Length: 544
Image (cartoon, rainbow, N blue to C red; front, side, top):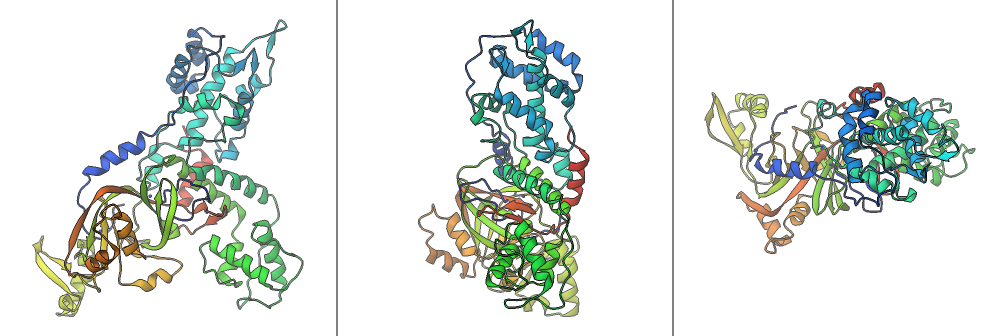
């Protein structure tokens, strides 16, 4: 996942098809409890003092007869006003409070939240908001406007903070549990003072608001003319001059990567540093050269970038708002593993994920076991496609690869690779029971971590610093010193260690995110999951 975190403590899950298994699956018993914990998260709030002006509760039923298309929110509206003893929320002394205007503005400009399907009765809200607030010279609250604001708040909160329905996320291969929030309690907090209104601490994963800011910037950029930058036959470097250098400086200036003189065609150190920053933000090798790959990223149409921002805003809506304690997150397109405590990023390392033909599933689990000097129990798919053909070509294949046959099932041998430095799982693996048979593990193929694109596995996730992760997971068990961990990794005898406290792990998929330096990052859509979701967002499919 990712540098999806600002210098402040932000929640980053990075966290999220059956595919060919990498090995064992101890079971799913613990997964249900942890999923329920995530789904039960709510935004707490104490209700404000009640207004001395109340309305007849029968007005709610009358309202929804007049506005039947939002009748599914009647229960939310009734519950909210029941807690308030049916006092007005949006009026003070007969006049609309400031928060009413803020909410109406947000609703009437939904495209700023990446929502392209208008709310039902949006025009009615607009008319009522700018109608009269007086009757016979007396200031009186409008019960229709009062209830429409509240109902539309609940509609807006679902669209902007909860997102499209569960069938949409599942159809887009997102198998992490979706968050739930008590939006009626948050509404009470919103009404307290204007400074605590929407935009302060909204009940949505922090990346949403950060991406929303860049959506506005890129929407403005899309109004400008963008001439393609022609590629040079060779890479340009420090000291070179070229007419395209001026174009690149202007482009980087617009992207906030370059702050120098945009009129010069000379390649100076300031440009080299800016190119490195741009390359880092886009997952390229940060060599500071104007390469073919760098120019290709610079030429991606702004409308394509906007679609990517929209997609990842939607994914942000699906995540829990915050987490406490330790957790691990993997962001597939970033090829990174991140370790957190109380939403504070502790450290990050490179990861290798599943190939396009063997994608790593996006889901939630809990690390329960650290297994030193592991066996690799070879899955049936790899057995059929790789091991058996190898055995047919070379009778010594099993012996040469430090494997052994432990039995037979369904006419196939049961094969495992013995512990040791050549074992495909390396010297340690980390198990979190799940139905996808995916886990984290070491690898003897260390060179792959130097690649910029690291989708090479059969689905499981290889990590660059396994000993560091083992020490982190075992930190509450005093006997597991770094020296003992190193010894166990090289013991050549498999050993399971059960964690005293299971550690959540999120495997997720973010192709646009804000890093800890407040910069917008883009990554390639390695599993081709973005475009379908982008089309659904823009068409409004799955919104209601």
